Image (cartoon, rainbow, N blue to C red):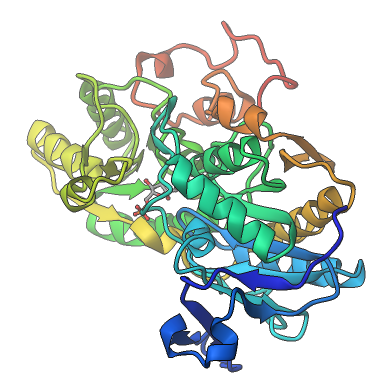
Length: 438
Ligand code: F6P
């Protein structure tokens, strides 16, 4: 462990001092920005003392899209680091807080009390900006070396002995690049999509599934009352975990995933089959990243971000409307579309996500304490373990079409919009429990 030094910030920076007044409705971050020119001369000397400390300091940031459980990670990391004798600071708006204007807040057990149950992140997060390091699957964009140098300077000046980066595949790709630049990084996986390799589950997923299942429960009764076909579009960029789990839990009739090619004929066949059994309503769940029968996804690009020179992932969304229109046209039936969108990312974490996120936060501090940088905490049931960050971002976790969850769904008559619905779900498949996560 390096010797702790007083926290210092370079004179050109703007310092942001934050306070969090307790607020039952959520978090109010009060920011006071102080331009260095406006400071008394004594503070403008070679260095500006920002946070004198006698303890080594752990930094933490939350990057990418938010998800329920981020605050539980922050709280767990802060509480466990305090008990091991570390100070803790949280960088604001993900990696952006590490570079000019460097922005962070001290984190203590006292000012993080009560955040365990709350969605979002008290540190803020962004999946845009100067650090975009992944634009699409298998596409890594190198971070500007000048930015990396700035991050290294911030870490040095604030005496950060370990930086916990909480994020999904894009954010962990950034973490890996920081680590390769000599920054003592620990990764914590998060995403509602549950698509990161090396961890059985990411926190946020269970909460998103609970939200999507609740939506299906509600759609079920109204669809049945009006004898309608209802399409629910859920998130899931590369993987259909949310659609699969919510579809099973919420009694979906058709589930469309990025992992299983599907056709409109097959969907319509399922609707007709149900009608022939006297079931005059159908629930269709579609993952936003499901590929169209003719190939490709329904998405748009962010022209503004592109014009600003930021590398962005395409914005998925719209496949639900497309499926709705085509099924309505082919069957001449009333079909309605619901896009669940960011509701899946908001709200309180479920019990499962609170427990998982708490374990991740505590384990991240343990890894820092043991000097095991460049690793990412992961869940390998029943234990929390760690793997090199590279192992997590190298391979995405997708639904295995031969997994037991898919087989069980097929056994119940759930259609995946493919021809396989007509063969026995068990006959021609080998069930390998160790290989499947479903
Ligand atoms: O990565 C998680 C995710 O929820 C994806 O499923 C979705 O495509 C994306 O975030 C949307 O992110 P945003 O709208 O914040 O750009």
